[in-house]
Image (cartoon, rainbow, N blue to C red; front, top):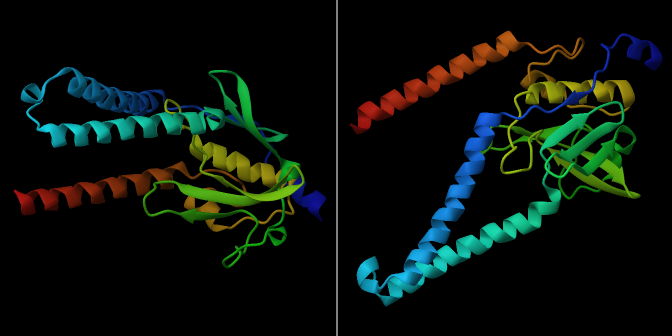
Length: 240
């Protein structure tokens, strides 16, 4: 039965993430300018007198400490995430690979054989009903997927948003296609893994043909844009 079902699936083709170059450059330069702004503030406070800065001794010391803490936080973030940063996601017949193209190193690899059943995980709260589930965070535009994996003889829960983890390579132009290929790969190589059906509908993917309904996506995008424009217009007239 499973063999017959697999034959009816559309063919699996590997996919590589395609970064949104302009937006990624904007976001990356934003963080660079933020770091330079606070670093310049420290230099400005250090080389100028209180009369030139217009601050008293306590104000200068407080601002200097705040800027220093922010710079230290940025440095700590870079050092902590340096070994975990990746720019590309590759999904092929082996599984999922996370690659940093700047040094050509594979940061992580999850093979299809590494996927595990949810029953093998001890959840503190109510366990999910499917092996591959998702949550939609209120402060994020993207769903976060999670599923158990067996790596180095240890079961852990892997979370995924199909976004890059790099200051200059975070957004992908083909994120929807990555999700579609991920789901199709599970159907081909791990049909025993259950998937929350809402993942298909939330990303305009047909569960039978694995095709993406781009027209429906555009309609919802247009409606969402019009609603946002209407809300901003109402706020503008109420405030001004």
